[in-house]
Amino acid sequence: MPADYEHCGDPLPVGGRWTALIDSAGRRVALLQTTQVRVAPIREIDEAFARDEGEGYDTVAQWRAAHERFWTGPEMSAFLGGTPIVVDDTLIVAERFRLLGPV
Image 1 (cartoon, rainbow, N blue to C red):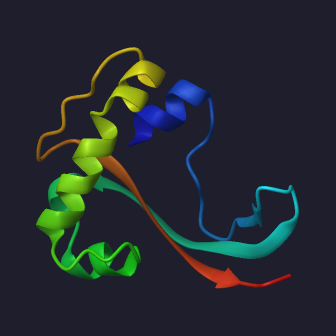
Image 2 (cartoon, rainbow, N blue to C red):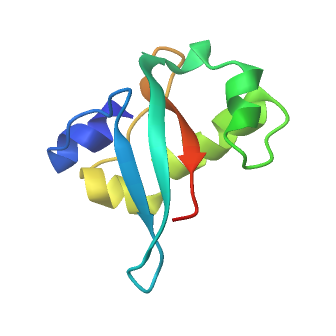
């Protein structure tokens, strides 16, 4: 959700950006390259995006339910200072990337 980025003061991701993945010991283990970023209403997420996330979602409904639980859960609500309301028009940040690793 853009609100997450705004709350942190972080810019939205952009295509072409490189990100290092760091393990719990602080070692760089892989690189990601952002290939596409789209801010869109949650209703525009399709099954291909839901499956490609790699979390085992077979349907958009499964993807959305899991993300709504996260976004409206106690940790995110505490972080944002309130519980977001997720409706079909709620904007999300849909990011695609490719894995370039290990390093």
